[in-house]
Image (cartoon, rainbow over all chains, first blue to last red; front, side, top):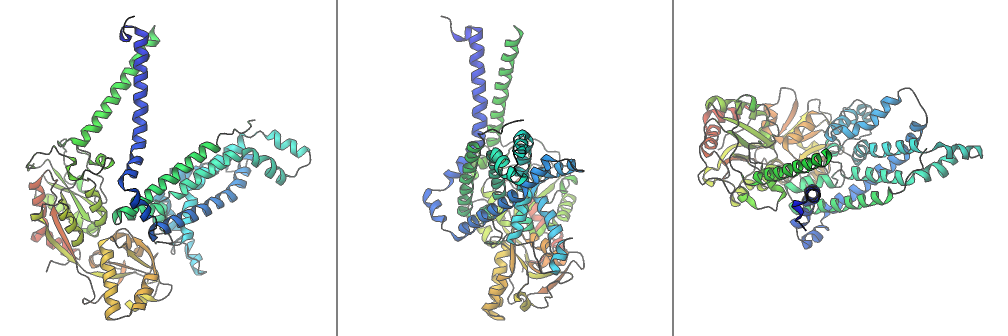
Length: 273
Length: 324
């Protein structure tokens, strides 16, 4: 029996395995090590004790509340919109299609500046709202607006493609059996696309939770009003290091939970046309 | 016959390139020899807003991923950092409030010392301090806070003998030019509905603001005034220019900034309400050469330039006060 490196096929295969394994380890470590390093930077005692820090708690509460509200609005408005957008052709549909994707490519800070220029106190729309006493900039509402702006594409694109891919035969059959469009939407369309929609919603939630640039630009940085977790990390890293690391770890844990949820929920396929 | 050998070659190439990548990564952690940077003396001055770290060989950004092994991250630097004329561009970490004057300072420095240039990284002093503590490379550090300077001195980042006071600055309240909040005196800051922008307390200007408000509450107004003013704060910015921007945009009614920001701004950008000297806070800026510098000579020259008549005059032109 000759050695593996003297047998051409075996040696090639071994090299291939080594090379592939190497690349996989390289990529895995590059992504995993920084996240792991976070956990090793502070002790568990410090972590749990800083969980009761009012700054941490207010950032956590504000982030969760605003992200949930943003998500709710995106789902309530976005689902019918995606349905209409996928089912009918209307003039300008191409443009709307592109606009949906815009916040994905636009740098968040630019989105924040844009929102400020439009809805700020001297903004183009904001100045009229100001006359009625409505202020948007530097409020929690601004946080929600910023989150919706940057996170909605995740849900809209997902919903749109789900509705497009779904076999319309189901809806047509239901129609012939006498169901109203609303009933069809609620009992046929949604249940069939549910798992995909939920995974889109979960990604939207994650994006909204992590929003920084647009928030700090449009909503400012005020604990309890606009200091979400990412902002608290940024400020914390420059002053209260422990708070910064604690909130970073919290965000990592939430992100992991989100990813597991997406994997679990995206497993069911939509019945294709 | 052909296919297996092509696949084999591909695997070989990928292994070699992965090894190269690892080598580059590791070399980034330990190298000290900067690749010669051809300093475009005037061109290098342009980016005075937050400069990314110069990519001259050593890439200290990588060291932040490893457990913080402090300043010993580049252990292969030779014992006496040598004076390298003309090849070096100095990296100056500067308190953000020097934003307006830094361009001019860079140009004048290059004019006074031909072949030298300075690149400024402008940010809140607290942000710069964190960056240095986490391994960022800089030659000179201009701090807006004695507290942070002393912390960095204690942690061993400065060449302590080079740390000197550079300039001083008082605080002032600025308003948008059309005064939307109808603020005429400091007392009006406590009016309900007024929007105030302030720096976060980790920013030197923020600490100064807190102190000034406490002084004013004790001497002139009362504690309720102090409480109402804080209730009117809508944002705690992470740098002093951030406050100035919010005021100039008209999005807030008032902001606490340094006098120099008001003096150096174009006419009619802001209105201002001065704070009585007795209650005001005199911020002292310090300049110092960092121990990690690879060009002590050039860095010292920059510090000398900043402390010289020319440098001090330029600071004065932009509204800074001399060290008493």
